[in-house]
Image 1 (cartoon, rainbow, N blue to C red):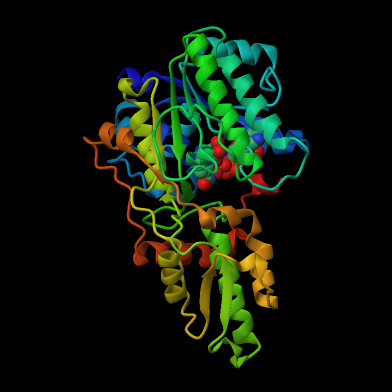
Image 2 (tube, rainbow, N blue to C red):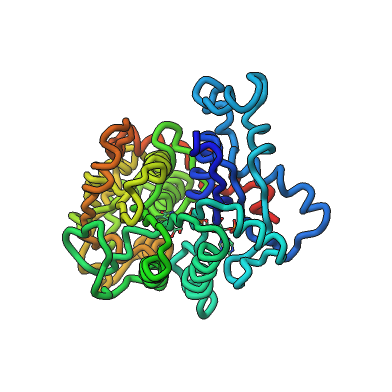
Length: 410
Ligand SMILES: NC(=O)c1ccc[n+]([C@@H]2O[C@H](COP(=O)([O-])OP(=O)(O)OC[C@H]3O[C@@H](n4cnc5c(N)ncnc54)[C@H](OP(=O)(O)O)[C@@H]3O)[C@@H](O)[C@H]2O)c1
């Protein structure tokens, strides 16, 4: 009952993981305060239209998924004929802001109202691409932004902090990584990893110094829903599959026979471990852990306990795309060799993920397994059927080109 009255401030709710978590928190009856990034182009019309777009972004077509039977809170809090849309209207307040400013971009009165009513802060917002665009975008959003969220958490009423980190704060280490604070700073593959590592350290230190109850969640590489394939983000796995898909189509279009017996070499270690986790497992696990008091002070790997090897994933994808004549050879030494046109194209389009094709990281998830043992939440295996569901969704949504909502286009 207490859980249902909890007020939770969520950052990053318009994102892939933040949206999935927000949906689940809403269904479980929490009162939500969403800190949504202010757009420069915001006008009155856009603002007034905004709430319904955010609702669409977060609830999307998931509405049918949560029938009223599954959504116990609807029965208790509202009349039976009220919809999840109405639950959204009743329990959600949207605040425009920006985590990069000390006030989180809020008006003074909004900041102090939220400081005094929020019980839990769920910090999910981050810059998640690996490219270096601005000089210090990762520092400003992921590190400075987290500092600002910590300051908010420590102002007014005592709050609990939930911080979304990443399993890849482990950087370039190898072997088994445990669910505990990383004490020695590792080397990193990119600025994203580095910024998330620094932010995670900040969270732990600040929370300990200020007696803030905290929990850290470290997901693996998130892909679409295990049942429907649904995703709003088409990076990582999708990028590789899309390039192969396009190569196949261009051969077909040009009626080229070259596909027969063509070998395309891609960089990587055939035994690299690709820690793919479906979004529904990640969001379900996080929300279940969040509701357990014993998770305070804990760090949880929300990762795949049996990640596929790169060569296994390649075989699954090639079979599903029905690229029969073409052979994709995973080559540890590729960069040192001369590349043909197709190989250059592949490398150019997937370069930012290069280092992950060599990763031998394994993530111990004993704490997650222990805390979830009384639930039916388990990480689905990356079977051919699951990869097929993910690819089907991506292809039928044109790799995200038709999936952008009005809000994302603004
Ligand atoms: N996706 C993965 O595979 C993965 C794996 C491990 C960990 N994670 C972590 O999970 C969290 C969510 O990732 P995601 O994949 O869901 O990311 P995402 O889809 O890129 O969403 C990022 C969210 O952060 C918001 N945001 C960015 N800058 C902001 C700012 N200055 N002020 C306020 N909000 C801001 C974005 O708002 P806009 O909508 O306005 O852009 C968006 O809602 C991140 O912390 C990420 O590090 C993700």
